[in-house]
Image (cartoon, rainbow over all chains, first blue to last red; front, side, top):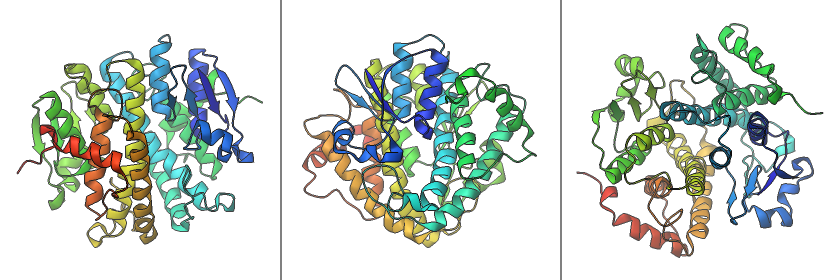
Length: 211
Length: 211
């Protein structure tokens, strides 16, 4: 199998942490988003969505969504389970991964893509050119703050997002917090549970940024 | 366990079809979204998100995301698998379920919630009051049309969204098509693969609307 990715971007980042935690080393090709390589004819022939990450499987199938890539890799490399070791944990982890995507990642993306000239005509990922909507940048900031509160409330009395081990729910929440820094947001001091959890998470080898 | 739902709404509808396909009958309480019951103190004490569906488990855990509810119910009631019978199918099904949510459901919701006075101050689901952004209604229509094309292209030469049986990927695509009708969109005639798949899906007992 072959992974197409651009490590600094938030969805690729989720997958990088997942791979580090599990100790998986994949054949990898970098698609440089800063150079617009995702729009190249060559990459669009591989992934018509023009998004990363994408995992091309030996069976000829391309997986373009992180949740699908997680699922496939977890079943192929079951050691160090990150999608839950039992049915209830798995359900909660998938739920939190989804919430972090919709309420967290999408909020940051709204700010970044609608409030920054670099994303002019690229207000949404994918092949269609959508114009920016400046009100979305404003709303995105509000949503980021609201989601900090959601995470803080959830993390009170908890060591991890779900159960008693690090999972993709922690990865999602962590990458949301990191990504929110791109638009100059930060966890409020009053969010003490989220702040403590961030401190613990930040110490994990898997989340260290590679130079 | 107990299910809180409002069958006509799109996310509850996904779950209703899932339950019908698997022949699962749950203790169910209707939360009438038309009457604003999701904002009642009583329901917010159960689900602070104020969203449906939500599944309250005997273990005291509340699942608020369809993907998590699917996962839990599939492991509890494994007969008639709808999340894939093998690892690769499962990865593809989760991917398509996610894409239908992000590219399909959210596009329709953008139109509905931003282009309709009934949703004034409720441009996003959940407890925070976000004002409407009329440009999102316009963009939502474009996105619905784009996603019809994505589905049509994917369904060429296929009987089902993934593999050779009906799964939650079909449920997601079907409920997107139904939901798009709420905002007066319809599958273009040129989308013959999607149209044929709709005809086949429409004939399933599980998708018949209850009177």
